[in-house]
Image (cartoon, rainbow, N blue to C red; front, top):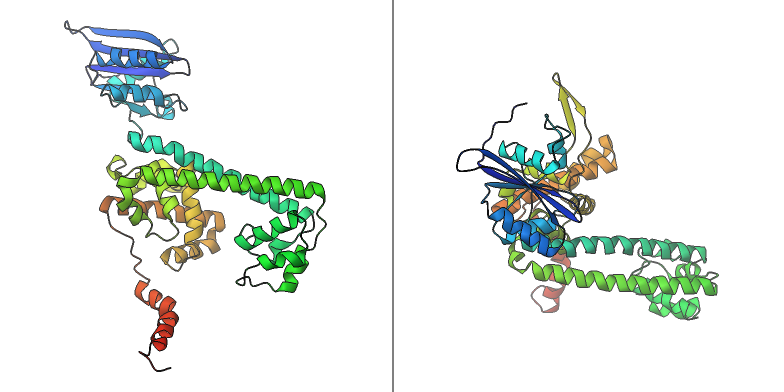
Length: 404
């Protein structure tokens, strides 16, 4: 395949952990094609030298493959000298025909870039890239927290404690206090004082659930798990505060996203740092869904459509969206109606995934318009009145505005 050049000067980087191979293709003053290959190390001084060398040629386009996390440091170095490089998907590069085995990766990238055959992926602004570290670490800690909670539940069950049968959350305030009381040697009758009056279970049911055969090893493991759980909860709170502090200028967008059913402040913040606040970078809601990997796979040939594999996309966005979709499926809104209609035909997992797809498309529209979410089929005023009317009537009777 013959590649027709579009740009006068381009640069391409082949990024590795300890080495950067840079290829620059340009036309000199005599209109002769020049190809320069140069290698740099992977340390900060090497990246700075690479960026200055590339900037000296004033390239019209700079490209690199998204190689793991190694592309981020060279990208930042080029950004400091005023070069916004393109980060291209390696799958797109491999699909371009004409690759020769004796051509270096950097040179092949430069040739494709010079012919305008490469399209850069989405790279958020520097402040969002920095906050992504906090958000993604918080997701890891949340996963660890879920694992530790499940482990403690198993150890309690192994010791004969069936508290999860009568309490909806064994990590709630009352249940945790009762478990701590058992660990210090108190009897089930003595720890009943920690039970909240809001618990639906009776005292007899709680006593039966707390009767067990906890050994010293059970108590040791449970106490260690409890300390680890509380430490993880503290760290997650710190990460959340740091994330929200960094998103101070985007408070208006966070408020808009929270109007969507199933999306709280933490989910809104984590999604915002992943997809950014400029929807023009994606162009359309469908392209955003394709980038995130939440759109349905499809394959059409000869007029027939068959299911296709879903793209990997952004696993962090997909995970948060599925959590929000689970929450939205339990709310009174059109999203719940969509979930129920899909649940019968496609099953729970596919219904949740389809709901996540719809949520992301809604977010695209809201961020682009700067408007809040309004459900056309739900009367929010009527819901508010139904929720608060008993309290209002009670206060009106108390102060004599309505006859008792």
